Image 1: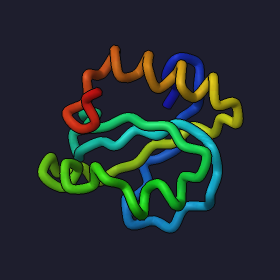
Image 2: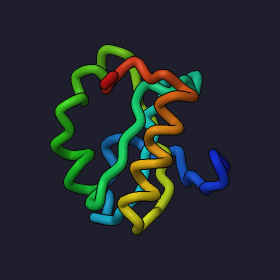
Image 3: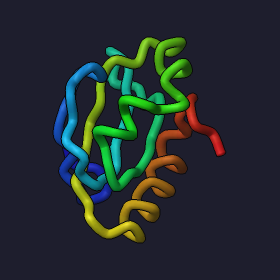
Length: 93
């Protein structure tokens, strides 16, 4: 699916082993409601040790969608735009 011009691949199970690649991710529930949005330079490490995982569980989130992006500035800009668009239940800043 495309969001703000970026191709988000998925859905992946949150138990999937991910490579340490940079990008922006969406965490969704079964109805494809956005529960969380984030950005990272190492997806594998971020997802396996995420501090908001309890919130994902409480909200029955079970899907990850991911867009690869190497530029940290682009990741931060996209994450901010997506947070405004979706107002996710987890990770409110």
